[in-house]
Length: 427
Image 1 (cartoon, helix red, strand yellow):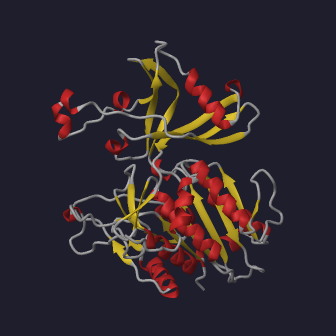
Image 2 (cartoon, helix red, strand yellow; image 1 turned 180 degrees about the horizontal axis):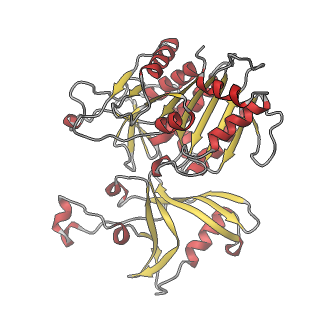
Image 3 (tube, one colour; image 1 turned 180 degrees about the vertical axis):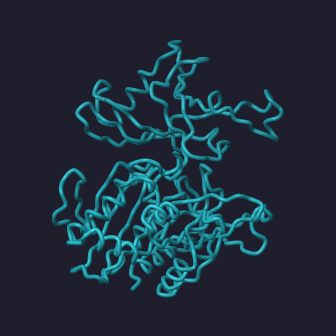
């Protein structure tokens, strides 16, 4: 069964493997930007002369830019935006103890995962540790933990229905334990410290997630599908980053924004509802001599692409989708539309999207909700309402969204990268 090569497939798999959390994704983005010749600046210093090709990080978020040689009264702004986080099980602080002969770690649900897909799966621990001197250390362990289901013989209803009590059922088995200490955890603390390259008493704080340890895999008779954790939304992060790096600079500012915390509402300093993007944009325009009035006019000339994965039609449950408009995996980029503006797409931003697709030579699909099923939302309305920027919502079609193992067509990744470059290069 020969594999069909797909542009970006191997690189995307490597990107996923390097990015088990938003913090890792930000580091991976920063590494690729640095290799491409972009220079990092820091929020704690004044930006009197920011680099023409530069970027800044804030926790699990990154904003990068490519500036024109000169700024004029017609200089515009082109943005491709995505988010770096995914649904997960977050480790509670000091939530490790012994019960029934096991060392258990308490978790809390982060975002909106399809919780049953997290049971009986090998889980790794990943995230960031802050040492007592303020240093940040990223870690990812091998798979060692598991959230186990009850055997069907002990509850016959489980074969038809798996109710989940988030407090009772989502404790992760860490190891066998005979100490009986109800507030134990030294063993796990030692592993965390070792993975971070620290001693346990050097750790001041930690922010860690249990994540699936199974690597991404190509599926389908022709290796045309990709199964992985975190396709939502690394498919968008990788595609927009690829488009940004291959884009050719011009007379307008080109900007990549990868926010954190979309899965929990974006209401954080590094989320799309926070001040990060607005502050970066104002610092860039100030450094280039724009007054407040110039700055507002610049924003009014902007176009943004909010990139988040879209629902591909499910072949076993097509009735859950619109009866006519049914985007499919492998069918190209998906424009997301919503009458109540749960997506920011309107006629003006759709026209820009259509021009970008034409420039890239790419056909696109459309997603709308089944009229009886309320849909989700994404970054687009946040960008549009906070900054007044014309914004279009779009993404790569996936199945099993928010599962611990999602599915996409790898050819769509390359198409979305080309489309992202096309939008950044719009006149």
